[in-house]
Image (tube, rainbow, N blue to C red; front, top):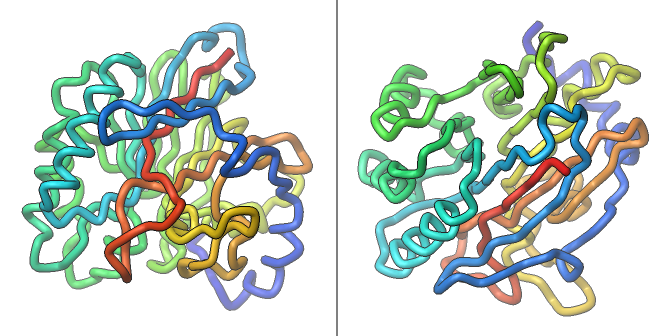
Length: 279
C-alpha cells in the first residue's frame, strides 16, 4: 500500500512519543582514526545465529569533492576495513549539488575494496530529484558494488535487511518479513519514515534494529543544550541523534552523518561512521 500523508499526518505526534532516547551525543562510545570518527554500538542479538555479526553504517555525505571530504572518506574507509563488517549500509543523501551528481558517486570508491555486502537507500535529496529515472540510482550504485534498496529487501541466510523508501517521494512501503531469517533490520534515510510506517500496524513490531540519519546531529550543537539546527523533521530535534527504544522494544540508532548541508560547517558536532555488533 503506498503512503498517503493526508491520512496519517495527524497521528504522527503520538507515534513519535513511543520512542524513548536511551543514549545521546555525549554518551556515545567513539574513537578517532585520522580525520574520521567511529561510533560503536553493541546490540542484543535477536537470535544466537547472528551473534558476532557486524554492520557499518554511514549517511549524509553531501559530497562535493573537497580535499577535506576526501581525507575524511579515506580514513573512514580504512577504519571500516579494519572493523571487518559483514554489511556496509549507506543511508542516502550522497551528493551536495545537482551539478556534481555523477561526480558524487566516486565517493563510494573508497569503500569498494571492503569485502562485505554493500547496500544503499534513497535520501530526501535523491527522492526530490523526481525528473531522474529511478533506474539511474540503482545503475550507478551498482557500479560501486552497492545494491540500491528503495522499498526492497536484501536477504541471506542470517539477515533480512529492508531499505525503506522516502516519505517525501510518496513511496513508502512497510516490509513483509520472511520468518526464516535470524535477524531483521530496517535502514532508512530519516526517522520520520520509520514513524510513518509504524502508524499502519501500531501493535506490530517493525524490526529489532533500525538505522537512520538525515538530521546531521543538528549540525550545530551547543554544549549542555544540544542541537540548534533542525533539518526538515516534523519532530524538531526529538530524533536528532543517538540510540532510541520503542515501547515495544525495537532499537533505533540515528547517526549524525558525515557531511553538511545549508551551511558548510559543523559546530560541536562530529562526522561519524557507525559500527554495530550483535552480542
